[in-house]
Image 1: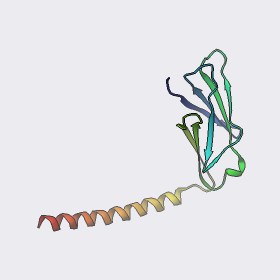
Image 2: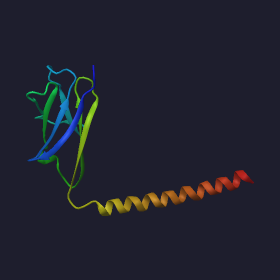
Image 3: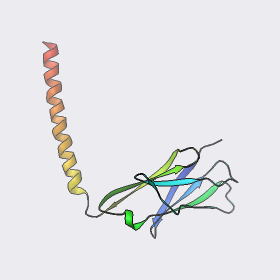
Length: 126
């Protein structure tokens, strides 16, 4: 049995849309979309005429899940539990300040590691 392949086509009208290629052409796959630790309701699959084993996937994105920051959604095969894909939505004020702060923090940590490594090399060489 082959594996399922999920391809995003777009996000439009509050829905994530994609195409799923499934190895069992006549059996409708069972998908679950998770946000944090909750499954989203309303995931729809529809077979694509003249394309056996291909399914249109539509995932409504509940407005109450959208807030400032980054929201990640994971799409899984319910049968195997395998992750087939994910999508992320960034809303609110651009995260530029957050990213700059993270980069500054990473630079400071890297400087500490470099100093500790140099001190270690000097101590073990001597």
